[in-house]
Image 1 (tube, rainbow, N blue to C red):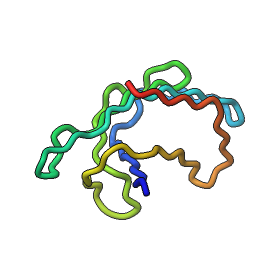
Image 2 (cartoon, rainbow, N blue to C red):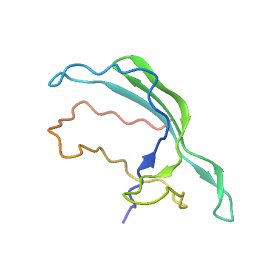
Image 3 (cartoon, rainbow, N blue to C red):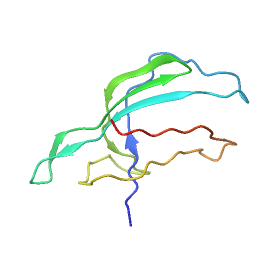
Length: 102
């Protein structure tokens, strides 16, 4: 069974470009997975660049580890894993999702 990995970012967005509630938002995410050394320590942390509605909101930010409900994020060695979209209990719909390995 593949392990789901959620990454935490402690960097606020550069700008708020959210559209009104009920309007479609677009996101382009360029994600670089973390790399690990042979001893299971982090060689390079995960990074992400995010464009929301065509505007750069995160620029090559370092992700500090997997999302924890309680506690401090800490990387755990993993290989390729699925991604997960969250809604935090709000009414959310997704469409036209494209995933491309670079």
